[in-house]
Image 1 (cartoon, rainbow, N blue to C red):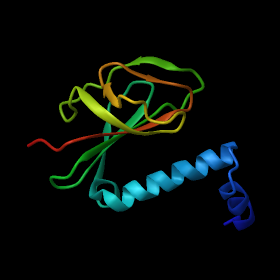
Image 2 (image 1 turned 30 degrees about the horizontal axis):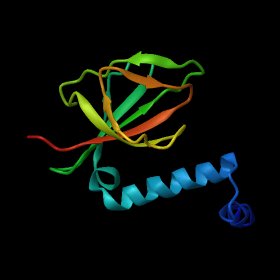
Image 3 (image 1 turned 90 degrees about the vertical axis):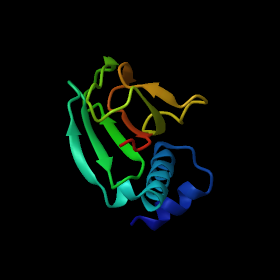
Length: 125
């Protein structure tokens, strides 16, 4: 670990490295809290030009990871899979903080170039 860099970042730096460190901290905290992220299975979800997978564990909250690996935006990504509800809650984004209204329609997702999203939704039998 580059401890000197991390110490500098923690002193209020607003650089890309500081934002990445904060994202890693938030992901780590979620992983500790949510069994689906720490113990769960990962299953691929059809996502066209994007990559997506579903994390689930027993009857716990489900998590959907959606990644745009390309350098072009994906303005109208439609995730339609029987395992997915119509809406999910945006937990994290690599590009911006969660909006005030974090509910997103899975049938009309928009991703920026190289963006990753972590979405959640409750377990339903």
